[in-house]
Image 1: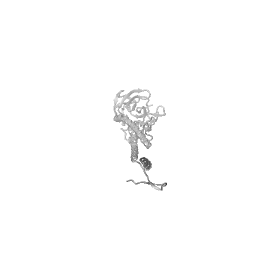
Image 2 (image 1 turned 90 degrees about the vertical axis):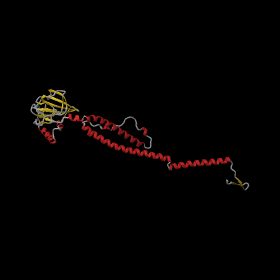
Image 3 (image 1 turned 30 degrees about the horizontal axis):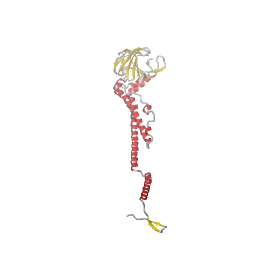
Image 4 (image 1 turned 120 degrees about the vertical axis):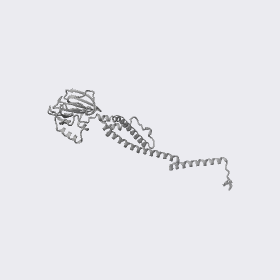
Length: 323
């Protein structure tokens, strides 16, 4: 039973019973309810500033997980970058060197993606910088992997033909070591006719007329002719892969244009035709149309000591140039 309430009446100097109407009860209850709502809102606002709500804690944890995963991914990408860099170095310095292919320029390997801002959709988030950095790194690796794949596509056919390349590459002396008396080297040599030093574009092997001349690698005879420019009777063999050999001052031919020859096949005989100071073979190796030093192509016939001896002997003799 509710306690009764009394109010002092100064007019009558007595206490009157307090009666509350239903409407007053409703108003009072409403005020109390409104006050409780205000207090609750204030409490929630203060609490939420100090403490995270369960939902916020879940979202924060999820955000931390995402950040951790991005950081882990970034570390993995750094490791992949190191591995890819090693593959690129081996590709340029080993595979392409062995297969005689130019290395891929750094500007091609490091090229990025063009166009407008590719990462605009990642902006505006709490971890946008991290997300954009990881995405850029991923794009960079993707691009480099694409270039590396294209590199292997280019090298695989060359690797498959490496056996043929090895057979075709000039690798022996064009005249037997028992048949030639002395040699004259590639480089600046004295012209025996003009008496001045000029570029000598091959090596000369002094030997008797009729001494056999051998193909130094597999290939196709592309020219047998008398050259009026000083070479005299001359044979050119195309070995493929951008390499040709020229044999000059010959006395006779043992092959015809279009013939296929193997390394060691006889292609003709030593002579004294053309602009020659005596019986000998002038031998040239051409790489992509440019004469290179033939002495570096004698690795099948010469030991290291014999190579050094031949090099020294070739530097002593200023004879038998083709001019």
